[in-house]
Amino acid sequence: MPSTIGLILLVPAMGMPLLSLSTAGLLHDVSLTQAISCSAIAVIGMATLVAVCALVAPFLNLWLVFTVSTVLQLGGAPAWLPTLLRLNHHVREWAMPEVFLLAVLVSVVKLKDMAQLLPGVGLYCFVCLMLCTLLMETLIDQHEFWQAYEKNRAQEM
Image (cartoon, rainbow, N blue to C red; front, side, top):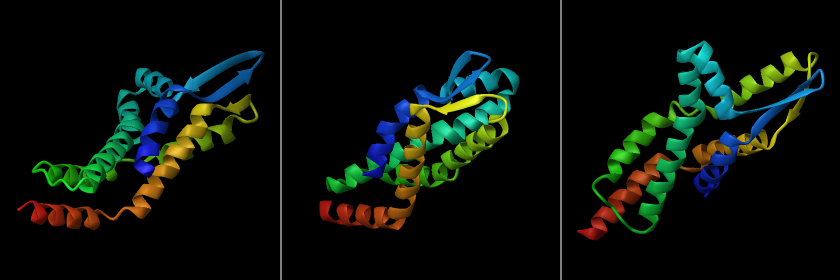
């Protein structure tokens, strides 16, 4: 369930404005994808790392858990499922939306005296996405996936 909600929240978290910066009568909105693409111009390595840890790895983590849990709940045990389980083990290490959120909070604290910052819908979606990811990591035991796979495989034989 958290993986489904997380996948739904990922789209507005990426595209909707995270923060609105208002200074000298000018208002500028920044989404997660805009922030990554703007930083890619300055430092390509840093932007790539942020994109992987804040977007790609959380998406893959959510998608892999959703796919594996759906297949196992339907009673299937296809030969490719262990590959997805192993891939998810490695992807989980790179999914760090909470680190990106901490960076946003540090930016807010640093910029609060220079400009007015307004949270956007994307920020709320990103916080909920982070909570879904943390909930999913807390509630889902990877060993149970492997046990369910072995059980479904034994029932098919």
